[in-house]
Image (tube, rainbow, N blue to C red; front, side):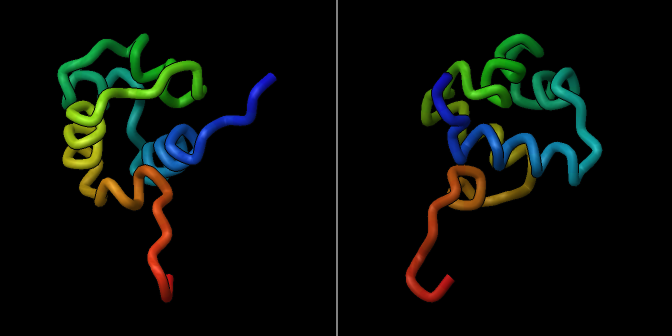
Amino acid sequence: MRPVSDFAANLRRIMRDRGMTQAELGRMVGISQGNVSMYVTGKREPRATCILRIAAALDVTTDELLGVKRNGD
């Protein structure tokens, strides 16, 4: 079994913090709940355009969603 990506773990955490379901995020982003499920479990990675829409829907930066660390962070 491969480890879950930072993206999947961050997506799960942010959704939990906002009390958002997979179905709700899917509706906001224009994707199926099944696709959201694959993203939060790390079975699939979304395309860049979808990452942008997910970040906007969750009101976070793409860096936060992807787990990008900057110098000094």
